[in-house]
Image (cartoon, rainbow, N blue to C red):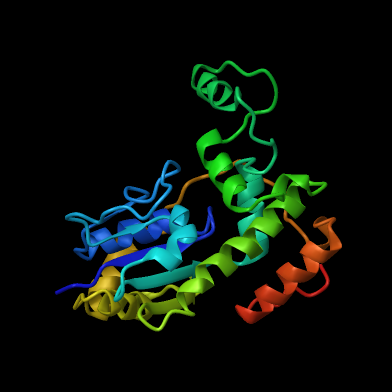
Amino acid sequence: MEPRFVVTGCARSGTLFMAESLAKLGHACGHEQLFTPETRSLPSFREAQGDVSWLAAPFMRDLPPGTVVLHQVRDPLANLRSMLGVRMFQTKPHPFMQARYRLQYYRIRFARPITNARFVRFAAEHCPGVFELPDEASRAASYWVRWNRMIEAADARDDLVYRRYRVEDLDDQLLAELDQLLGGSASVADTARVLGELGTSTHRARQVDALGFGAIADVPTRDALAALALDYGYDLGSG
């Protein structure tokens, strides 16, 4: 029997790409289908084998024994740049935020575009105080650290199967290894075909200038991000 699984990471870390890859390999999963912005407790998997969702991170301690957790990380500066591109931490959640977001579909804007308020509220709820930081880059950096640490709670549980990997390392061989963890039997040729079909397809974001390490104004946040990034194999230097 194939194990239940969750693939999670930060927002803008390539989870949609992974969901499409696993679906093509025959796994019954979706993207943010079980874990949504409205999720407040562990959802039932029902017929699904798993879900690929950054919104699953707060529920690592509640997952049933035997669940496979794939922790997907992305280069933090690239991840932050993408979050700034969608303005995820630009505007503190407020009562009219979702209505304003919906009006953007009709090209009605009162100021700069904003991202989906449902996602912003979810991030703010599980990272209390993140909007108290002075600038958007620091908020995104604090979120990156705290969200990844939250997912690491799965590694502390002896009754879960935990595997962390960098999305930049995702190739034919690594995808085949991850497929096997989920009970699949894909060959390297199978995964090469899947990755070839998908190319580098991801959610596109507004283009933002290259983000340097020094752009994170809050020094403790910057230091925390550098330390965790190094643990994950990313040397950010002094930026």
